[in-house]
Length: 270
Image (cartoon, rainbow, N blue to C red):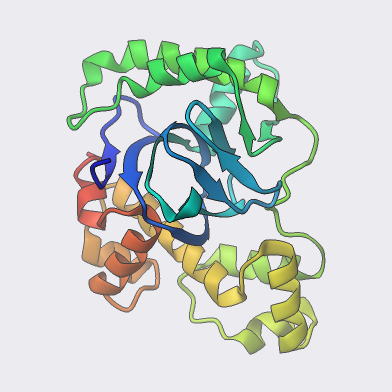
């Protein structure tokens, strides 16, 4: 396999498309989008709040917003896969359209599944991703995406099953971070907010999210920077607004999670 991680332009707003062939391992992280993808070659393994993931060619993988996961090739070998990342507001709008205006919750249940029909619908959507954004393809892409989301309801639930969501005693600390990820918070600040000792806070975060408070703050800052870049904010300004020390600091964190530089991602977000 040729080593590559590419984010591709897509004719619709609120959709990120990527394609990768790599032996790269990804540390624990989360996305603020829904993720749906297919393994094209090799074997993929990851940890998920909904269970262990292991998928081979043709397997579909998915994640819910805020869910913590990681990723590696089975046996340390390379694998190839394609992903679509969908903003929650887009999914909500598509679900309302599909249901005739009714409000519908959407939560993926199993982190990996196999469905030839779903994979074919995914392929039709991902085929609209390219190195250049082509608005004239928007209607065709939108039609394909509606069909895919309608099909994905077979693999989702309206029940509250988002295991990646924060619960219990750390809820107030999570809300404090989410309100302003760029704020210079300390462990003591968050412990006081949650009414816990610093050690209790660390233990509760690790047990419920699989991340330390520091790692969670870093995730929220990366997600904020991604949204700012997507909105056209300059890289240096996005780094500052998201709470990074400088642009190189943002670049290192961005590459570690997404496999591409912020500049490369920005070139596809215009």
